[in-house]
Length: 160
Image (cartoon, rainbow, N blue to C red; front, side, top):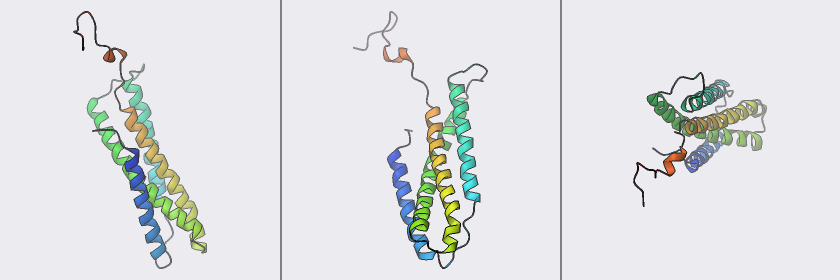
């Protein structure tokens, strides 16, 4: 399994933004409930938890004093969580970007003005989730050792 590609996240975000723009422009005035804050709080909470996991996991992999050794299965689970969260965060980022863009440019009603803070908060929270997920994924990497590059020594054969 390789690292998450930024291009994959960008494509997912752009597709979600286009879909959100189309849906919101077609249905906003017909069925426009107030934009809820619960998804914003959930995305922000996940971002905080994944950022904490990134800091804790990196310290355990680096064997900082006072930290327990890391469990390899836990790190594998964190990598899967980080990859899934990065993609989900990118989709939410695209959705909230399309929604926020439409509300700022085309939404001229009072309801649109009232929905702008929640849409902008969702955009920021989903960006934070993408950043925290990529940080967690990067924190789960095994550090490279200097002696891995040059394995020639008195007991080891040359790689030439």
